[in-house]
Image (cartoon, one colour):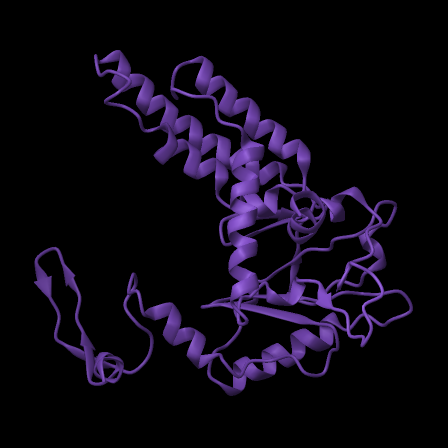
Length: 285
């Protein structure tokens, strides 16, 4: 078994300024940059669950875990209880929680104040959080996320512009799609819940076309629909897809009374209407 051999009898040593230390046996962790490292960690924390706090969702990705604790009307805030359960599991499995890296963010409806939610001891409260390269804000906007994308995209455009000044032709520098577009469209299905951010990205793509960084006009809405359809098709075909649970449930009845066979969500805000699954249901179907 290749995995067992990878984990068994492992040793490492350090080379610094020409000096090499002796080999030392290790029985924890994996080398930085190994492809299998995150998968091993996922197996190790497979039994990490929050059982004593209903409606709480634990999202795990290697050593980054996110707790989503909804506080519904006429219900008690159980975020501290969920954190305590998380800490107990971490300590019993020799994975102490680094509270210095833990952050808390409150997402509220308009007109509500975050002061109505009690802070968690030892956790610093922030107005935004970065998760897997996307910056989420307590206002449900993605202004900071798009701003970071634009900074990276402008750096790539600067390199392309300098190369053009050195005499390279546009045909030789057709890098806008691979360098710039990949930056702007990462996480597009998530960012699209906030239409103003889409407008900002479209303005950048329009400028790229006018300044001849691209040979054709790029429409962000067309890219969004292609991305949404591809993702929606995947989660419909795969029963174990992480987003499978947000799909509308099929109605259970013996007689077909209406053409609508799925239970659609109750939509009360434009932001919820523009979210990924509702776009796929209402806009494309």
